[in-house]
Length: 389
Image (cartoon, rainbow, N blue to C red; front, side, top):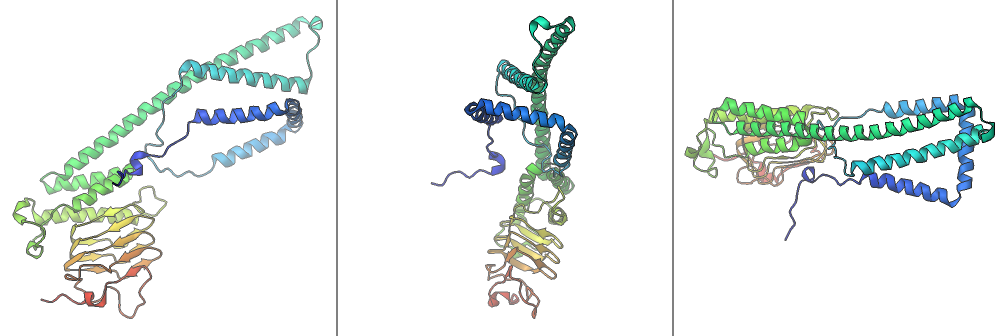
């Protein structure tokens, strides 16, 4: 028995714990230092002396690295951002860990200063000023330890606030999704059209939920539909059971197709583009439709399996730069496909397995005398003849 297949967008990707990762790094460094501690102390002292001697060059190098790292262009792919995680370790353990790290850092810095600047004079030779300076150093260390604790508490509070904000944003998006889906089921065509535009807007606002919005729009097109020429569709059921006005329903469906086309026009670098996503039109009825100029790119799968196409479905000037557009078992009821001006650069349009009983009404799917692109798979010659009667 096959296991249940769950979308990766739902499951997510496992992420290693940051605490364990950094703990492993610290242990590896401690192990390396413990092999030859004297040698590492000498290296640290030499590095500190060199940095003190050439500190302008060190500062300029650090600034240059910060500019390069901070100036890299980052593409925003998610409106909600990465899901934040609440702190997993108790506050007391977190504070103790940071205090231990602060003590270690203080000791290392003290040793480096001792080696670079030299040790203090003997205790008997300390003046009152030296003692006051020592007290100031101790107070500064204590203040630094208190600042570490305050930073730890503030950091945890910020993490909790981020988790709460993420939940609120996700709740808003889910509410929008639910209300838009409800609008699609309204009896009024104008309300259904509003639901279509609401889902498209949500898909553009929340890229992480875009495929779900596309799936709902495609599911709307897969609903039973009886156009005015329903007598040509014997397999679509009794048209009397469909209470929606065919003319108004056709306009809603054309709006869905138009929105899909418009978002496929957007370039790859546009965060609102729908390229590379899956579009499942299995069994849908297309009473016309215009995908002219759209670009099908990436690994997305577009399937018109067993779809019924009435009138002309236009792909004029479309670009197929990746993925597969499949028409397995598609029927053309007084309809056809326009591929004039289409460009193939890695994508595939498979028309080789359309329903031979109802082929396209146009005799030629691709202009005669023009070499057939490598990505276009045409049906057998006998299936391209005009439909009789």
